[in-house]
Amino acid sequence: MADPKSLYQEVILDHNRKPRNYGTLDHASHRAEGRNPLCGDHLTLALDLDGERIAAIAFEGESCAICKASASMMTANVKGKTVGDAETLIREFRDMATGQLDTGRQAHHLGRLTVFAGVRDLPTRVKCAILPWHTLHAALHAIADTSTESENDPMHAPIGDA
Amino acid sequence: MTARPHALAPARPSALEVERIRADFPILKSAPGGKPLVYLDNAASSQMPQQVIDRLVRYQTAEHANIHRAVHTLSEIATAEYEKARGKVARFVNAREEREVIFTSGTTEAINLAMHGYGRKFIGAGDEIILTTLEHHSNIVPWQMLAEEKGAKIRVVPIDDSGELLLDAYESLFSERTRLVGVTHVSNALGSVNPVKSMIAFAHARGVPVLVDGAQAAPHLQVDVQDLDCDFYAFSGHKLCGPTGIGVLYGRAALLERMQPFKGGGDMILSVTFEKTTYNVIPQKFEAGTPPIAAAIGLGAAIDYLARIGMDAIAAHEHDLLAYATAQLERMPGVRIIGTAREKAAVLSFALDGVHPHDVGTLLNQDGVAVRTGHHCAQPVMQRFGVPATSRASFAFYNTMAEVDALVAGIRNVQKVFC
Image 1 (spheres, each protein chain N blue to C red):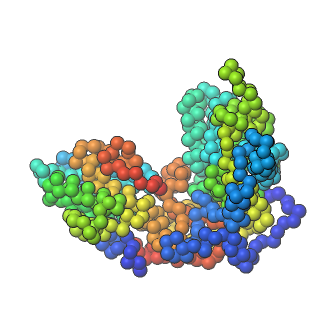
Image 2 (image 1 turned 90 degrees about the vertical axis):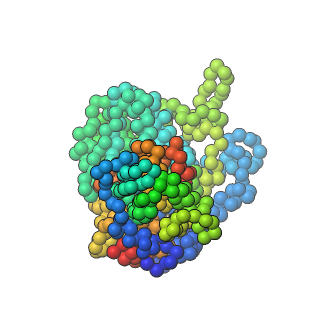
């Protein structure tokens, strides 16, 4: 991997190879399924809330490396956090991926998730990175199914199709 | 494929001639992502030579007016050039008559025209339409819409593991209620060349007309609608080195005359009163409103360009590219070629173990190699092979063996990243 501007940095490849929190939960208070019908990315997300705190979270599914790494890093980041903190990350991640948040200049809480900032230059891949966050949002709002192509999805952002 | 003998069959282009051909295509000298472009997405859309670009500029500079309407000189020039383009298309596919060529916005609209004009008039409740697993969505969805509206049924010809149609199954799908066959000449997802001529003969023996989706065939094979004996043949200009927004529905004159209009408006009528409208004759009956005049003339110029090179020479060079690329990929561990029909045209679909096609596409793009990744608007094919998507390299006559090498090197890089 020569190109340092590449999205395929070691941290993303590592999460793709060894996804964290991969699998399912025996007890989940919230679940949602996320799909990108244009490329076939598909994941299911399960989480268990302890009051306002995300006590446990797991995902599984079939997807490209960008989607899987995004899901893996997302679960690692929101585990133990409050629903409010997760919502902040969802918003900031989406804004970063769609080029509305410049992580170099504006304040944010994304930490290492900024490795996905480069996706904003790849319009056809933005949805891959956002899908897990999309699905987390749906799970927290008790929307059982979400799709990157669903019109009424609050996370829906018009982005070029495949 | 149907080969038509040429009086002056050109020799196969040598590597040197390919370099000369490449000089005609300004975009092939570009580097859109910072790396020299290796354009292997020709099945999605091909590039335009300077000759066609120049023709579009000349039209807009000196010949543009609305057609079939005014008596002024400019309108007469534009009308003549537009109709001249129709004649070029007719000769390109060997239609009996120029009026059998209907200009549409592309293959999709051409098939929709056949559905509305023919299907809605002649296909009813309980009737059956035979399609194949290899169809592009644009030759599935219009017929599903018709089936839903009329209560008709769709029967689907299966394929084998190589991506060839199962012809015994095709023949067994015919019944008393079969009203139409829709079949792609060349599969856009796999490259399989279907034996449409014998399939048409079988359908005609049962009185069933056949629509051939030629979007992927017209750029690569010598198409002869009389030899094929098809009833409809649909294709697009932008896959033929022409502009977007122009396509063709060839239709047998007798069928076109019996069909109902697709779109209502100007130019498709002879007379209009609020009591009664009399439709124009073909082809105007199907060309309501101001057509894409410039694009049609550009398509004519593209056909001239291809004819100068020769479709046989084009097919031969692309065959060499495909054979070379196939041999290279077959040797690579972790690479699976999807679609291994005995007869294929210019398409190489593949999957890499453990790597999603979208990652393949993004990484190849970083090396300047443009391929298509996704379901190729052929989800039934993807389902048949149990993959959500594939990566697809598709070749044109201006591609080189060195570009195949760049693809192979790019695939090795992808495998290195994911190892």
